[in-house]
Structures are given as structure tokens and as C-alpha cells.
Amino acid sequence: MMSRNAWLTAALVILALFVGSVLDTRLPKPDPAEADPFLRPGVVGQAVELRNGVVTATDVRVGTEIRSIGAITATTGRWLVVDYVFEARGEAQFKAPATLRLRAADGRLYGETPGATAACGPAQPGIPLACSVPFEVPVDAIEGAHLLVPAEVHIDLTDDVADIDLGLTAERAAELAAAEGRVELAEPTTVGG
Amino acid sequence: MIGSVADHTPQRAAPKRLESWRKRYGLVSDILTPQRIGLVLLVAVLLVAGLLGGWQDALTGDEETLPTSTPSATATAAPFTLVVKKAFSGDELKPAAYPSEGVRYLFITVDVTNASDAPTFSSILSQAATVDVPGVAKGVDPRVVRVLDGQGARSFSPDVVVPVVLIWEQDAAQPAPTSVTLTMSGHTFRVSTMDSSKEWRDPEPAWTVTLPVEEVPAS
Image 1 (tube, each protein chain N blue to C red):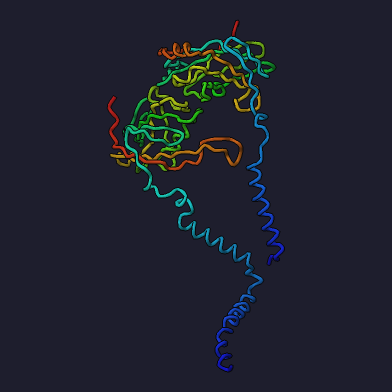
Image 2 (cartoon, chains in turn yellow, green):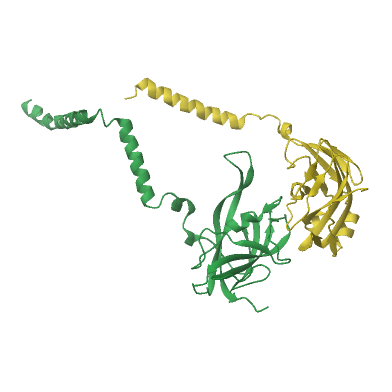
């Protein structure tokens, strides 16, 4: 049989936990910026340094179909294809297409494309590899879009992320959105090889 | 005064009864401690709740009260906006489904739009769709195939309309359905209680739609 003091102690402990929990929800938290990725800004044609390589966006193409590894994939929106060159540093690297993202001007994110898209790799250190990555987007996501290339597997990690402005002004976006053809995605190719 | 004493006599009966129960409890108090009695009651409540079907029925609510949608109407099952169009039954629908012995397919065509602001895996959609058709295995999610190119849908991009066909396998020994009721569940975007990952979780039935089932048109 628990004594009166024991019951009182248990009640005080529960009360203290409750008060602590309420305070925890109301007190200010540490700056979440500590956990943000390290964004490395750039533009098309500019080499952007990551801790494990260098990435350079070279071109933007748009169509209503893509052909990749022999398969044709269609959309009711648009395929926005970014061509880029990746040069690994230190050791051979892969850039899986599913790890790259396109960020629209309003913050919407695009990626994880259907169908088969060749991985960018293996990119050997010092040997640039030309690759392409497709994004299925609505027409209104083209203007002001940025390409995000993480050093590792996700853009949300506290790690380097290339943030490349694709230069898609209103005029350029309207011009690209009018395209309705098929975009061919080439296999990863060594640059200058 | 004597009469007054006689009037108070019945009031002493209650303490006597309490005393007798105390004596009886004293015989078993070393075994039936208050903690053990509480534990037994808790186990009894769980046992009765389990025998009556558990808490799940109370949590999910009565499915008969779900709102109903209509074919070709727009309805939301988070994170998707959906237009359920038609249902078909047949042995094949190339290149999405090929003939297989003992298997008949049930197809439902849906226009899917991801209404969130990030890519969402198609598994979220397939987990959200259930049908109640004899011969269709319970708990087996449908395949999701893109209508435009016949490829499996890996994910859905925000605000892009993607026509898909949901495909269930039905035991061919069962009769082909003449109508089907599709139940769609909505999800909640929340942080996992196990780790810090944020995903669409906790599917809850949102609405149903009943469609006539046609034969797959001859190709």
C-alpha cells in the first residue's frame, strides 16, 4: 500500500512534467538555421563548388515528351530538362537523378521523375561528365526556377547544395513553355573525351 | 429518551456491514492488493474491448457516413485532388496489364493532381485506394500506371495533372463486377514519432464513389 507521501510525490512529479512540457512548447528554440544546407549559388554556365565536386548547368530544354534509355515519357504539363556537367573531387561519385530538385519561384519542389533516367556517373575525379536531368512541371513553374544539386543524397541535409539560377525570365519561360516537342536525354558522356 | 436511543439503533448497522466486509477483505488483502485489483480491471477492459473488435472501429468511424462523390467530379483526398472517371474489367490492358492465368483485372481511371508543394510518391495514392469486390485480395494496393505513356507512376509532381489507371487483380473464378465502390483515404503531413522524417501518414477514409464497370474495349 502506497503511503500518502508516496502519492503526493507521484502527483508532484506528474505536475512537474506537465509544467515542463508546457514551458518547452512556449520557450524559444535554437536557431533552425544551424541545420540548414549550405547553399552555393550560381547561374547557368558558372561552375559551382561542392565539397565533393563541381557542378555546372549548361542548358535548359523544354518539351511535352522525353526519350531516355529508349523509353518515351509524356506529360500534360512540360518536361524541363537541365543539362549539366559534373566533375567529382577526391573519389568517384554518382549523381542519382532522384536526388536533384527543381525549385519554382514560389517554393514548390520538383523531382523524383517517372521512368528510367540514367544516373550521372560514375564520374571519375578530374574527368567532367555531361548529364541531363528531367523535371515534370506545370507551365507556371518554369519562370524563375532554380536547379538544386546536393553534395549527397538530399537537399535538406546540412551539407553543400548547389543553387543554380536557370535564368528563366518571364520572356524566356514563355518561349520555353510554347515548346511541345520531344527532348532527347543523352547517356552520361565524358566531356572532352 | 429510551425512544430516542431506539431511533438511533438502525444507524449503527452500516458501520457493522463495513466492518464485516473489511474482515472479509482482510482474509485476502495480502493477495488482492489495490494495485493488483487495478491491474486485473485494466486487463479485463482490454480483453472485453479486444473481443468486441478493439478501438479501431471507434477511431475510424462508421464508413456508411462517408461522403459520396460522383464519377468525373473533382474530390480531394490529401495530398491529391482526384477526378475518378471510369471502371473497366478485363483480362488485359496492354501495356499496363498482360494476360495471366486465373487473373481478371479491375481498372479504374483517375486524373491525379498532387496538391502539395513537393513530389509525392505514388505509393501514397495506391495505399489510399481500396475497392470492395469479391475476388480482389484485401490489403493489396493497386498498381498505378500512367495513361499517357504506360509507365509505372513513380511520383506525382505538384500541380501537374497525371491521368493514371489503378489496377487490381481479381480471382477469375469470381464473377466480373458490374459496379464497384472505390473508397479514397486522405493523409496528414506530419513528423514521424520515431524519427524526424516528415511524410504523408495516417490514411483516413475520406469519401467513396460508385462506378458502373464496363468491359475493356477491344483494341
